[in-house]
Image: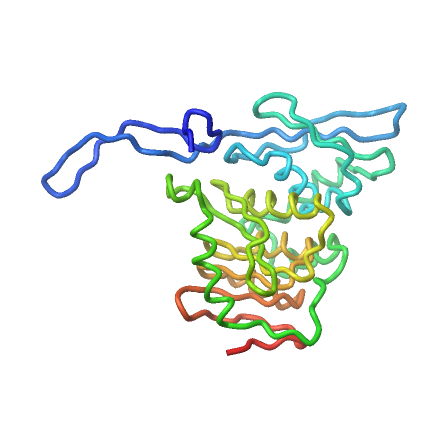
Length: 279
């Protein structure tokens, strides 16, 4: 990898203290920059453009990030309502909606339930997700989720985390098939951005999420379960711990939520009735 040409990685000279040894060396850093998302909407004869959001992200896959953000925040109902996502400048992206898409900026001003620190109660948060979600995740029938396959996923994720391997500073979200094959991987300094990039890429490719397993490199928060529920992902695994509201959200939507997936062990926090965990 040529660092000078890589948008996700920077370098800096650092002083390393190791016992009685002090040396200077080059260290690789994960890039963090703001991304302004603008939206263009309305009928062909009266198009309106205005800023929608600013997020701190790692450059790269910005189009996927914007598509995923629009979907998981229920700004659009499905990927077909996004006509195009175009770069305006290095850190500004324009999302063009189809003329028939309904876009209510006033509703968005009232809507941001996505943060676990937003001050609303858990039930209100989950109700908001349910009202915005197109439906419960598609659950596979007569399928067994193998614990052997699950326990192999973290190693497969780490082997594919190119930028994390160099910087140690990124979160990852990955989609796996039911048989454990890696389908897609995205990294970002923000765990929510990594998941939006992943969902945006997969949805834009025309795929649904009904036969996929999501693996998160860190903990499972309410925000990530909210995005998974809106996308329709039936199984969410995390290397770290889930929050109480994440567990409640998973159970409300019938999502299989697995935490502390490390080595040969994991904790199962919720389980759809039509699935079994094999051994």
